Length: 116
Image (tube, rainbow, N blue to C red; front, side):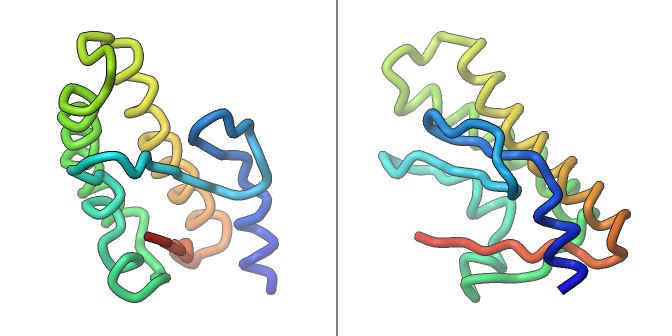
C-alpha cells in the first residue's frame, strides 16, 4: 500500500489533451505501427502488468525514442514537424524519469500496467 501511495504521488500524464495528473501515464496513438510502448515495456504487454526496473527502462529508451520518431514520420499529418516529434519523445523521457524517481523513493521498481 505504501508503494502505491508513493507511485501515485508522481505528477506525470502524457497523451491527447491529457493534463498533468496523479499517476504516471503514457498514451500512444492506435493508428499504425510501430509502437514505442511495446519496445519500452514489453513485459507489461505480455502479462498485462509488470514491475520493470528503471535501469531496464533507461536501456530501452533510445530504441523507443527512435520508434517514436519513425512512427511520427510515417503516420503524422505533418511528418516534417520536428517540434511535434520532440514533444512526443519528451513524454517517453519524462515517463522513464518519473519511474526512476519513484524507484529511488520506494526502493521498488514501478508497476507498469499496459492495455492494448
